[in-house]
Each structure stands twice: as structure tokens, then as C-alpha cells.
Length: 135
Length: 96
Image (cartoon, rainbow over all chains, first blue to last red; front, top):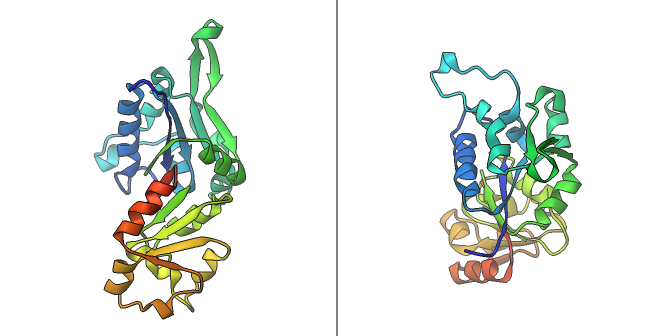
């Protein structure tokens, strides 16, 4: 597989009520090993996946939220968050994890992975992709 | 872009979300419980205003939905038509 394709993972489920969020994260990390151009979108309840302060000890389920901060190391550096989905839920970017990556072309400068976009902008982001994985 | 929706609009927001990302030239294919959105007189039917819509014939038949119960302009397709739609559209999103 030599041609680099633009892969978009669309996340629209909250993290613990169903297995979608965790499965998506696992597929993203596996997919990242294939050197494709990976983006992630968080829309609808998907924005809840990235909230700070998750503690699943009472559920006896794995808290996979710290894993999102490793995405930058897997060169997953384009994380689109939809503004309307945050606002509908009374959230702001301050409520979410701060995800970054280090740019080796700029002496490992730390850069933001998260891009806050409107629904209309997200439609254009989608239009620019090659392959979709919806969760 | 082909948007495939398989959930009832009265149960999930999949159709609302899919439609909200519509750009020119997009097509909506309703399958499984997604077909209920295309029924005339349903509160969800207006969500499809201005959309190019197809439904899978086997799924409406299974649910007892006659073609004349569908909103105007909907194409009823078979499995081969499903394949043709996927082939004709460079990109596909399946809204779960």
C-alpha cells in the first residue's frame, strides 16, 4: 500500500455506555501504524470522550481517557471538535483534555492537536477525506 | 458522498447528524430501520427536505411499507442498486 489516503474516524458516542469509543480508539491506534493520513472528528456525544477528570474505578472498567494524550506520538495530530456539539452540552474546550503533538520538523515544538470547527466547517473537513470509519 | 443511515429517526439522531453535514451532490440511502424516515406523514420526513433519497426495497417490504406510503421523490432500489450507489460515490459514510 504505497498511496497515502486520508482516513477520518468519526466519533459520536459517549465513552462508557457503549463500546464504540474504546473500539474507535483501538482502531485508530492500529491504523496509525500503516502510515496513513489520520484525522479524528468528535461530534454529538463523541465530545464527551475527551472530557477531563474521568474516573472509572467504581465501574471496574478501564479508564481509557489517558490514551487520547498518546495520539500525538502516533502521529495522529488532527483532532476536530465540533463547536455546536460542545455548546449543546454546555461544554467548552476548557472541559476537554489538552491534546498536543511534537513537530520534529520544528525542533520538537509542541503544537495543539485540537481544532475547534463549526458544523459547516466540519462538512468541508469531511468532504476533503478519502475513507471514513464511523463509530 | 453517500450517507447510509440504518437507524430509526425516532430512536436515534443518526439521520439528523448525517443531514447536518450535507453538501451539494450528497445522496442519502436509508436501510433497515432508517427507512421509517421516508414515510409520508411522519414527523421525521421533513428532515429529508431538499435531500436526494433512496431506500432499500427489501427493508420497506419487510416493514410493510408500500411505496405509495413514501414521501415524494424517493427512489426505491434493490441490492444491486445499493452496490451501484456505492460504486457511483467516491466516499461513503455509514452513520451508525
